[in-house]
Length: 451
Image (cartoon, rainbow, N blue to C red; front, top):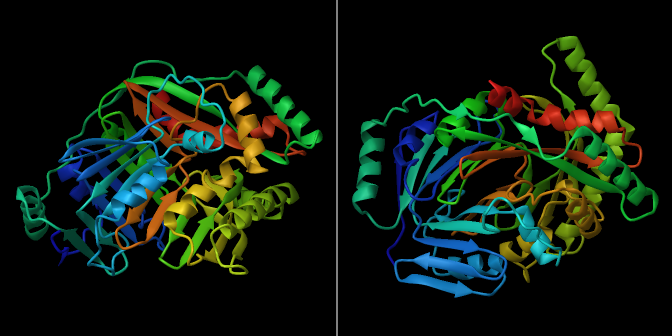
């Protein structure tokens, strides 16, 4: 196998200009840090035309490459690990040196736990990852752009020319149209009924917290890349992504990290606790103070911190799992969140694939205890969650990884847009407050799609 090559170029602050060259290619992917809004976030990653495609449904996982299509009945995440072993890493000083980029749907978690996957009205695989042997990485801290690749074919020569000459295809303004009302899959009365059932489960001791959501949908025509760019100013988040696959387009504006791994230390950053952002400075300050001091929100966050400490502990060295930050306030485009950070040192007997498998799906979007919460969610939510509340991100040939929790995420399938809003329900939750929170989180989407 050819050795990896690495070339540095000038800095491109808006990496969407580079992505415009490849956005219409097979399985094009764009992982965006929104560094201009989140200064601590460093990298954007772009690629397309994967050398292998891994697609998993309930009973079978297929791997497509130049030699044809092979079928596997193994654990889908293990299949990714097996395929990745074929590709050695010659570059180690980048977050991504080529590797797997894609998504794990929330429903894959149900599959793992033996929970029935309902008949869905969206035909989307449980998991899909491309294996990319080249990528462009924009480093917003070092202010440079790097191309990493193995084979210099005609396409790579074109990318090199564009980066050298600083000539990129300009994005043409493409209008998209919403062709139907944006509707939820449950009414307010149905939400009330399900809220009361969750309260009964909590009082009976089945669970402590349930993350309950409703799904919105609308018909559309137009370009999903244009939709992504229209949403971004109002919804920018540090773990954003645009994925263009033939069976689904994904536009994610996630503020939440599921797992990051540097080859030694694993980190997760659960979100629990929300208040809307106000344009009135005094009101905004009061909302932040209210969130920071809320006993309910802190208790809810702490439940999930404990759950995730346990999840990480399955694959980390004994005693290494620590809560680095507890109850930090982070502000995003339209909401303030209560965020905690947990870290651990992965054990020598484990690996990134086992870590993902044992932590998936993220506890912040299930509730506690996790498996019982997932069973209740499956009973009460009318449809599968699909990509929503799953995970999007990368695993590098070099062994590093970074994956989000796919909240604030829009799916496009067969000329329909789907997105979700949800929140954690606990013993002392109030229905109207919880119902309103689901709308606070998706307000930018509703505003855009109704206009």
